[in-house]
Image (cartoon, rainbow, N blue to C red; front, side, top):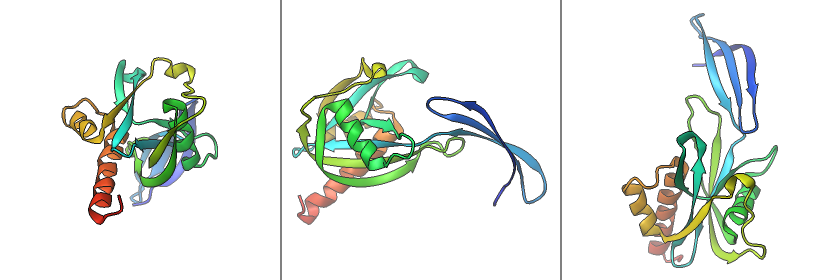
Length: 186
């Protein structure tokens, strides 16, 4: 079902997202509104060491006023390629480079009201970046932890990891690694 756009109103332009309110019309002729958080999208990185330990970060998330475990991730800049964003965020947040990269998937985070698309990558053959971590001001309290992939999965099962992008990245990444082990590619 296609809605006919009658009028678009940008109600708020922010640093992270814009709020759009569209007046729309159904094929029946009835009118309605659609509210959209317009977001540029981002990139997420599952950094995997040869022994299948992964990198998690723990940072404060203002909407929940809590510190949560996540995979390294960041917002796309205007016109930025998601892969370049993923490489930048891995280095900035963890102090590591990856030399082998694979795209795992792209996800719609909250398609009922938000246009955000997150691109999830796996980075392997990690090496230390010469300058270490390069945290932004809002990331000053961010900590990092390297855990076995199996422990990260247990953290999901115990409800210690609740972030959607992180759950997707870890579980799909584990599946890809498992397929690699069984096919002899690892």
